[in-house]
Amino acid sequence: MFTETFAEAWTLRSGEAPGFEVPEVARFLAHRSVRRFASREVSEETASALVAAAQSAATSSNLQLWSVVSVQDPARREEMARLCGDQAQIRHAGLFFAFLADHHRMRTVAQAAGEEALGLGYAEFYTMAVIDAALAAERMVCAAEALGLGVCYIGGLRNDAQGVKEFLRLPEGCFGVFGLCVGWPEEPVTAQIKPRLGQDAVWFREEYDPAPDATEYDARMAAFYKTEGMRGEATWSMRSGRRVGLGRMTGRETLKGWLEEQGFNLK
Ligand SMILES: Cc1cc2nc3c(=O)[nH]c(=O)nc-3n(C[C@H](O)[C@H](O)[C@H](O)COP(=O)(O)O)c2cc1C
Image (cartoon, rainbow, N blue to C red):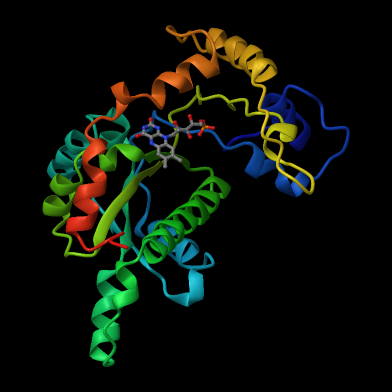
């Protein structure tokens, strides 16, 4: 369980003391990705409660355009890790969930009700399914963290969309958007609260301000990288600039064509 108070977590996140307290929000501010898990099992009841939390997220028009596949068999988990860029936390987490944007169920149900469901081919419904999957996952994350579990999202699930489709036997209209590792953190927890941009960089009043300045955040992140012993580019701008370049696409550059083959995002 992460133990920071609201003020402590806020300060680590933003570099400044808040000057006020909202203790109930402390656990949300204390999130950090956990990549080292204890070998302790997560019970079936807990897993079921986490899925119930995910299902309790808001969902556009109650369409519930998402699903989740858990992968628990050790040999299959190993293969899952390999498909996702060989990330060790996938092997060691108590639970692994692949979150799906799922048009298959809605298309099948709609067609059985005599509807053609042609809207599902539009970018709008692709967007809706990805939003639904993300909201469901994040609600699972909030529930997991409330229990003292740690989580790590896995965008590596998109490195090989076709491989994941075959591995999980996904029908057309299902897309593995990201994975989620959930487990008891290895003690002592080494993961730290990571600073974020200042509120004024993400929260605009009345109108967007199109002149971002990351100087202050770069300085805070440089200090964070140092305490974490991270090597490489010195600032967040430099690291992130590289991340959004073409050198780090890790197979995902083919995603658009693959999604179209699966009936997503055609119009
Ligand atoms: C959709 C998504 C995909 C991510 N994919 C990965 C991943 O494949 N591997 C990983 O170690 N972390 C992954 N992360 C975790 C981010 O790196 C992490 O959230 C970010 O650096 C902020 O750190 P924090 O979560 O500790 O605050 C992912 C996060 C999100 C939201």
